[in-house]
Structures are given as structure tokens and as C-alpha cells.
Amino acid sequence: MELKIALLKGDGIGPEIVDSAVAVLEKTAEKFGHRFIFTPYLIGGCAIDETSLPLPQETVDGCLASDSVILGAVGGPKWDGLAGDIRPEKALLGIRSAMGLFTNLRPAKLYPALRSASPLKDEIVGDGFDLLIVRELTGGIYFGERGYREGRYGTEAFDTEAYSVTEIERIGKVAFEAAMKRSKRICSIDKANVLESSRLWRKTMHELAEKYPDVEYRDMFVDNAAMQLVRDPKQFDVIVTSNMFGDILSDEASQITGSIGMLASASLGASKRGLYEPIHGSAPDIAGKNMANPIATILSGAMMLRYSFGLTAEAGTIEKAVDKVLDQGLRTADLMGSSLDTPLSCTAMTEAILKAI
Ligand code: NAI
Ligand code: MG
Image (cartoon, rainbow, N blue to C red; front, side, top):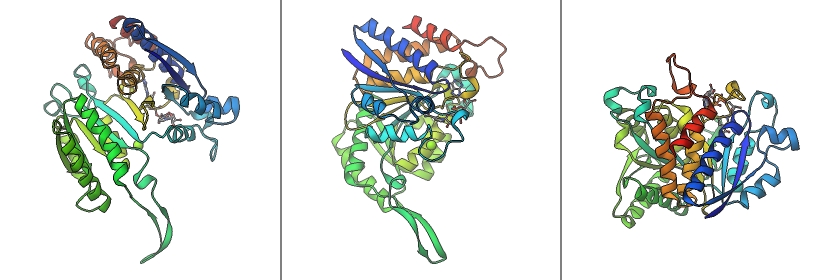
């Protein structure tokens, strides 16, 4: 396959970790006989410096003309004082909405080799867990009607949670399709005992579940889910939920793995084109020091192969290479805890993964 990939390296460690992901994707392409054509575009603080805009039109056009997009991270102290729309973070919302990305996929995986990084007890974690949160990204309370009005106790502010069958179905389908490619278990999380929008969510998910008889479906109230995630995360495989519940639960799920430098994410829309990025930020404290853990971005590249291009074996090869280097005990500084060994640099970790591929 020949595929065009836009690179939004961004700020801080962004360029270092995106370069690592590119090296890994090139190696994988070579192994499987594909050709990936990478084109860099400006985003975030570096784009402000060069063009005075965080998201230049050329970047949007370049992303829309590509088969997929990899993003590093944006922002840093240099641009913290900027107000209004000329802020690096504005570019993130801008590119997500320009690309129509209504799905956010966040895997939360605890690698057995990184067991000690998780705050959870041994008897809860066992040999690790691996779950995927599918969060609706462009609807719900973050996008609903809002404002101020006169209420019983004077002026009040309000926000509105609204979901249509169309919105619920399209995120549901993504989640069920993802479940079909994994262990065929899905849990839909809502608050249907209280919220009307959740009742429609639940009804629509039940109807969808009938179309996927091979997938084991259940639903759960969000307050219980927040508790179950730390009580017994292994009970979950795919979780599908609304924008706000997904925002909260995905942060909870990522923290119980204990390693911010490991976690990848994908944002998807109606087309195959997606935006793939690590969940962490631009880490200004370690930028330019060749210390960053490139694995979250490398695994984001693997997600791109799987979800945008359907290259499952290729994605698996990258993921297995990551497993292998971790099993060998190779660690960047963020994964070392209090160990006195010398950590691997960003480039050395990348080299090790290339070798494992
Ligand atoms: P951060 O995720 O950049 O860093 C938090 C801590 O984790 C830091 O100590 C950092 O060194 C460490 N860390 C993060 N990624 C790492 C990696 N790959 N390897 C090793 N260590 C890593 O979050 P923080 O400090 O809150 O934000 C820094 C900047 O990043 C801010 O300007 C913020 O707005 C921006 N940001 C951007 C995001 C994005 O582009 N999607 C997301 C979150 C924050
Ligand atoms: Mg959040």
C-alpha cells in the first residue's frame, strides 16, 4: 500500500517522539512492502512563531489531503501568556473539528513488565489488564445548549446534555466493531437511572447489540463504573460512553496503568482518516534532552495502521516489538522509578524497538 501521512510534530518533545514513530513506521513499511509518504505541517506554538496562528490553513488542508495524521503535542511555557484564540491548545480543538473526529479511542494497558508502575495492588492487577475506552467526542454536554437564566435561587448557569440516535449509533458501531477485533466484550456506561439522554443511549445500544450477536454486551451506571475500574479493571475489555463520562473515565483508566509515556490514542470520524497522538503533553521539562519515552507515539502509529489502514498484522508487529523491549527490561527514565540503572534515551529506545521489529 502507498499511504500519505501528515506529521504534526508540534512543540516540546513533539518532534523527538514523532521522529521515533516515523522511524518505526518506515521499518514496518519496509518489512511488509508498503510505502508511507510523510509530510510535516506546523501546529501549536511553533506555528504561532512562524505564522502567528496556532493552526494555519495549510496544516488543515494538508491533513485533509492525507490518509491519516500523527500528532506529537503542543504548548509550553513560551506561549503560556497568550490569550484568546492565539494559543497552542486552540489548534487541538480546531484540527479535531476540521477533521470531523467524533470518536476517541483510548487503550489503557498495563504491561506485565511495568507492573510496579500501577498504583493498584498485585491481587487486583494480576498479570496486567488491557482495556479500550471508546469516547464520543463531538456531542453531549460539552457541545449542548448553555447559558445563564433566572432560576429558583437567582441567576444560574446551565449546560445541556443532548444525544441523538444518529450520534449514539455511530459511536456505538465504532465500539462494537472494535470489540469484534478484540475479545468481543463490551460495556456501555451511562446514567440511565437519572438522565433522559442516557435512557436513549441505553435503548440505542441495546438495539445495536442485537446486530452484533457475537459480542457479549452489558451496561453499567457511571458511578459504579468509576468504582469498578479500580476494584477490578480486568472485567472490562471495550467500554463505550458519552463525551463527559469518557473524559473522566479515560483519565481514571490511564492513571491506573501508571505510565503516561506509554499510552496512545486515536480520534476518528466518518472516514478512515484519523488523528493519532500520545495522551501526554509536550513535556517542556525534558524537551530537547533526548529523554522522552517514544512508546506512546509509536503505539499511536500502530493504532493508525490498525484503525485507518486495516493493517492488523503490521500493527501487531509494532506492539509485539514494544512488548519485547519491555520484557528485556529496557526502560526510558519515566519507567524506571527509583532504580539506579542508567535509563535509555529516546533514540536508544527507538533503536531497540526497530531491532525488535
Ligand atoms: P505533560 O504530559 O507534558 O507532562 C507531565 C509530566 O510527564 C512531565 O513531568 C513530563 O516530563 C512527563 N512526560 C510526559 N510525556 C512524557 C514522555 N513521553 N516521556 C517521559 N516523560 C513524559 O503535561 P503538562 O506538564 O501538564 O503539560 C505540558 C504542556 O503540554 C502544556 O503546555 C500543556 O498545555 C501541553 N499539553 C498538550 C497536550 C497535547 O498536545 N495533546 C496534552 C496535555 C498537555
Ligand atoms: Mg480530560
